[in-house]
Image (cartoon, rainbow, N blue to C red; front, side, top):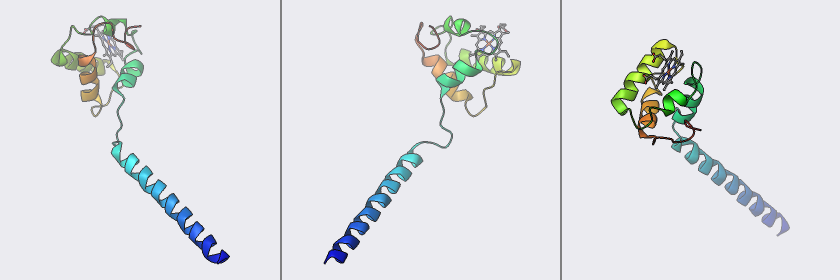
Length: 105
Ligand code: HEC
């Protein structure tokens, strides 16, 4: 009897571990492989040559097309934004309200 319950206990532990692994796998697959952090990209890649004041001054003033032009131009100057993350960066900039943090401090 004792043996049985020990075995059952182990089986439950195994089940619990596999359930945890399955939950983790489901969670991991829900996050895209190319997780993007446009705010982080702007705060690192766009502060190499000038501070964010220049960007802050344009929040709400430039629409998506204008930000696309600006980001393309900045990439031409050497901004470290990949083609893959560019759309997310442009979208993010275009949706920031004037004075929004973290761009405007
Ligand atoms: C390699 C240096 C460099 C990097 C990196 C850089 N910029 Fe610039 N940026 C400049 C310079 C130089 C100017 C001023 C001259 C000009 O406007 O061309 C400028 C001007 C600007 C302006 C004001 C002029 C305008 O077109 O509205 C904005 C807004 C701007 N940058 C946004 C950004 C953003 C957003 C990023 C990140 C994607 C970025 N910059 C990264 C060099 C850089």
